[in-house]
Length: 168
Image (tube, rainbow, N blue to C red; front, side, top):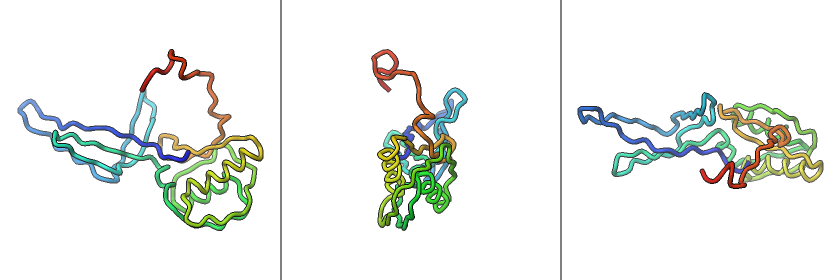
């Protein structure tokens, strides 16, 4: 929850059958999507691009969670993580939805010079400590930030036993 989704990839300059190079134009702010098996996995925007000597373009794109790394100041009345999340997304103009409303209210707080991630994380931690419920935020792969609970994302799949995941 403390980091944005990131997609890094390389684009190799093509040459056609006559040896002419294909022009590649990638700019900061260009939208990037990544689909796998007809399912959207990532939607983000180019933040860095670098061309190597071999005419390979190395691109780094971040999803909308990247904008929560910004710093701001709020004077919070007692609010839940859902309410803080909604307020911050509205103020930043980010698309969002709340899939699982958190009813626990964290104490009033002044957050001066904190990242938006930290402001939300404080209420997520308070909820976990007070109720045992675990919430988090994520990008849904289409650029919408989502506040949801861990219970909605449980799986019976086991990772790490050497059979399901051995590397990536």
